Length: 444
Image 1 (cartoon, rainbow, N blue to C red):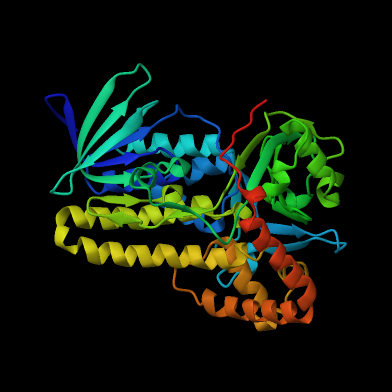
Image 2 (image 1 turned 180 degrees about the horizontal axis):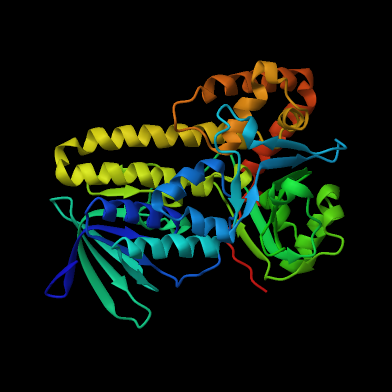
């Protein structure tokens, strides 16, 4: 990084030091680029989301951090689904995916994972600035940018970058500046979550599996950690969150009581962190990239976390994005072609996950996940590959997911009235004034 009249120069400036920002910064530095990464907070910092997918494993190995991740995580061999209308949970083991080469992932605390990835970027030559916020950007005629930042002491810092990567997460720095952030019209949800001790864990190799449980107003996650604690959260319809008459801690306990599979495991649970709530999960920017900039991870789009896809999509998109940015810096005329191809790949993965997410609470979908599939028809293997995040290696996952979708529509029609009633209710929730919930962040 060079300084000219207090303006520092670099090839790429990355806004945000989470998994997306650290991944693309590391790869670009390894490619010989001068990279600056700004992080508005100080690592370690708490962040929602702790459950990884098997296809994260080869990425950690490529970045050189797999052993560190293993030290902080507990192995996750599958995903368990619960519904009070079915006596036994249904567990999908990753070893049964179309390619079982990656039979497990890890449950980790995000503050620990993010710190590992951030420090690894530093080791690879990335110039990092913590507690430093990007506050303004000017894109020049030559597609380079001038960025203003403010550090924790209130000092103004300036950079001239040939290329900008927005990895600012849900802050959506560029999408907010460009006014291109759009909340989903098909899915609207809110979450309340915290960490607990003394929650009943599964036995044996299932101890580290994530548990998903449906109830009348959404779904719960239960994610066990290596230290014995557990993350428990509920993703619910905003109108239900708006109906609360108590403080947010009591509201979470009251909601847990509405879901027998979760309540049973939390009879002796003890709250060990503040309860946090956040609204309007799902959004995307209308444009992922342009002349001189690229959005990665949650800075571009965020999905309902039911399939734990966020960190994987962020890191895969960042690895692919690093190659795009590196090539554009050497061959600017290829920019449009490269960005178009990258945009198509990312949108396809988001679309694949979104189809399931938009229907996840439908009775037909719940039934299909709870009733074990006929492996001869490859229905289970296709869904397990989706749950493993194996959408980027050219495997015929899409073909097998078509079988699952076919059965979904069959069961939708077999119980047409109930499924249609549920579908109409969700549409009314999306349209109604009661579903409009502002971004909130309650801490006790």
